[in-house]
Figure 1 (cartoon, rainbow, N blue to C red):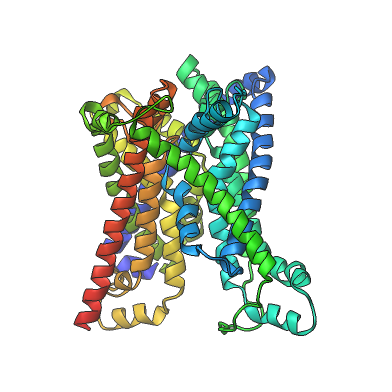
Figure 2 (tube, rainbow, N blue to C red):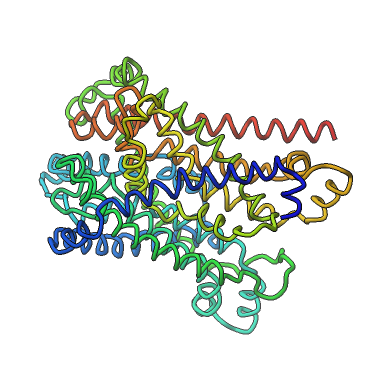
Length: 540
């Protein structure tokens, strides 16, 4: 506290951070929770309309999480342990769902396996009804297995190979080593993958909305209550139930993360190679990854082919008219809005998260724990709940002068704060406090020490916050579904509208343009980052 009194600018910066967090994270969510009032909650709960969607949400979450994590584990094990070929190809294919709006998988699923799907009708002459539980289950498995794959692969790659080598040297076979050493070592990552994937599946709005049919889950019920009936009270009550479920999963994840232990023998990293995997197991891993990659190529390849053909799949004449449609008028504005909103939100979110992380991690003022919790909390808030919060809190007559584009940007910033914040905290924990103290002992203020000493050392944390926020902003639907106006429409909104209008050519062209824009922007950003590193090395 004494340092804050000596540096009034630092105190003002801290107060500004607290004010922004309270205004744009806490206030909108409190507005949703209190909107129904006690009588509203009683009437809603007694009506029982929430029971079916709640049961459906739990069922979908259990099924989709199970299959997504199983696929993610197989994919991760194959990448880390097996000696199969084509690993770079599989790594690229495995992250495709991360760079696209998750609900485009549902759109492609309809094209492939719907009543007039290429596979179901074109190949087998069948017209199955794929809407409902099984359709959502299949789509969410494909859309969210990459999250499980990334988390599990990270833990497997950091596990100490000496434990496995010791077990093999003592006579244990590959299967016994897997069950007694590899799997136990991967349990922290496996648990985190299960809970993280479950949160994403539970909160998913786009896929159930497109392919759910009459099978309603909590996010789609909340959307229907507002869009169909203008019933904000019931929508707020449904969203609160959804929030409680997501918070429960997130608290469990935090407790698991807090108990992780990746060190198996000592603090020293091991360069020992992993025990050889039997050729048969490597072959099985290759077949499994090839099958999953083929499905992903089929899903995204269908989108690309549809975007470049006249009327897919009945008229496969090559055309670019769908992209001309995307590039003109309000559609072109939607793409520009997406790029502008995402870049601004990513830049501000990364910087704000880094500064907030420094205030919490390096500060000694009271209330740091509360601010730490509030900065992490948006990770557990469903996008549909966050969007309803902004709609409830800021859709006021006295705020009509505010451009709705800025409201979308602010929502993107603060919904994505946790990733950049946690990256900043992790980075700061690796930087010795003596560096901060050395700067202040030479007469620099704490703020100057942060700017001149720590920021250059935490470029990786900044990049994580920027890239993650940018990708999530480009691909999000649920957060902006209630906030956009005709002038501030973004790409995901237009894709969703075109899918509902059965304009597959326009929808798929928009999807390809959206994914392509994200990839190009990330490549440019990576090139600029490498250029700065190379320039710094040359100067040194």
